[in-house]
Length: 316
Image 1 (cartoon, rainbow, N blue to C red):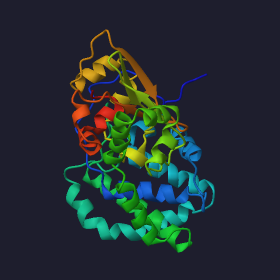
Image 2 (cartoon, rainbow, N blue to C red; image 1 turned 180 degrees about the vertical axis):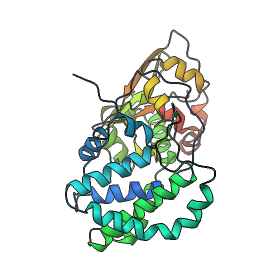
Image 3 (cartoon, rainbow, N blue to C red; image 1 turned 90 degrees about the vertical axis):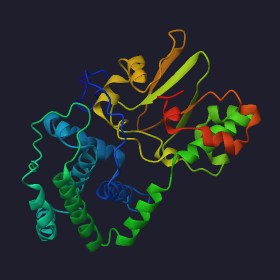
């Protein structure tokens, strides 16, 4: 079986760009529109169709596009293929929107390349320049306008969905971890079924399944996604930019100890290291070891100690 160009686990890659990048409005808008089109009412766009879109780009286009631009382009391809919108309508709508942004685009032209051929190399993470971000905004606005005109979306819906996807955060995962640290019976149930364990705390896990893996003095767990960006968004929010980078996706399964060293975590060779590759059917949450003074802390105080990186496994 030939491995697709989107499956980069084990490929050579350089250093991981550990600094987090901001999540821009057009990127949030792409995610919100995608979520709404795939909800139980509309069913216009499935995860499998999006993945097929990525796999139809060809290697050069896939590698040249930034993460959210890939999601946007795949969404457009699927919707056009299914006759939800047409190419002609979309081109006409973008042409109407461009004059509003023309001044900003021209202001960037002396400094940036706008054709997005990306001849320069982005070995770790393709990052849009300002003109690329403007282009992304134009494209998602055009798509949203067409969908609203057809009665398939409402503009207010998109705003509410953006607010919804901004609301999950590390505190939800930390709440789960802190309860597991203080309640042995709950930890047993959580490790048996992460989704139902989260539900006990009133936390809804939107992903297919949540698998919780426990760190011990002898065992350390690390989570990645070599295919795309599978991540427990409903309890941790959006993945950090380094998690979706080529370098992390490629190297985490090939040289995990070296990857952890770049995050400042040097594991003794005596500690077993297990790498978990997330996919469409399952997400992973690392249950870190409790701090040494956990018995003296309240559950809320323990939750405040839990970090996002510890729940991914790049910190201990």
